[in-house]
Image 1 (cartoon, rainbow, N blue to C red):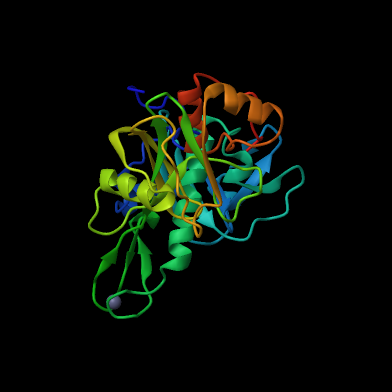
Image 2 (spheres, rainbow, N blue to C red):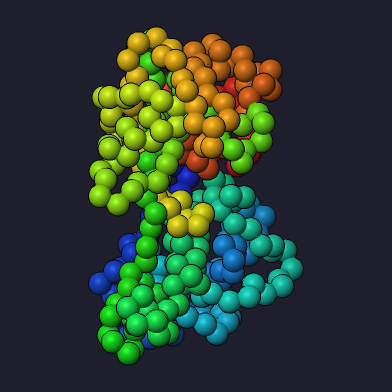
Length: 301
Ligand SMILES: [Zn+2]
């Protein structure tokens, strides 16, 4: 459990995000005028996808009116933008979001869609200035909102969440069921980081709140953006002392929690008694790291 996770579905973006060009209006105008430039239209967390799957990317001449958010440049210098607008009806393409295609898209396109839907949600929910209540406007090619009345600038916000694989001294893993989940779904514990709290403190607090045990030996293993709608999942390993220490699940947050050996988990999945998290999630990658390889069955997404 020492090295970082190698593969995370939504952490595969390959673009140079070109953050220093976002306020360069000459650069942005030239990039938009270049027919090699590609535009991704997003609406409600979805984009048009063709079989493959592949994102339907179009030249600026075919793009709808709307904000132009610079997503970045590829190694050939091709610029990629996102535009929030109603998805047009195009034969052979259909709307899809990250849950459906986030795993199957290639690295470049997974990164494009992850970035674009994260920006879309932020713009849609942060239209007004927190200081004066007036309407804000988009600047910095979609990465800042500015209040024209008082000049304040507001940056995209994230809700960081820790997610932790807890193992006991015998190597058993702790899996639990959240209140909104299907009866057979199990995963590792997770929770939002609170103000004034470190990530490690959040791991300790969440495990104690959710199942009533203490953990130590907390180690970072990786992170991935989770714009569903505006989180960043930060993955940890944590250890609980003893063998299968008694769990006292918090009734509001956890409907069921138990320890599993590798053999027990394999048997439970094989018999359809439990369903593991899908491959989009960092949870699945953490569980596979603990398990030592692919799980016997996994949902498609
Ligand atoms: Zn203001």
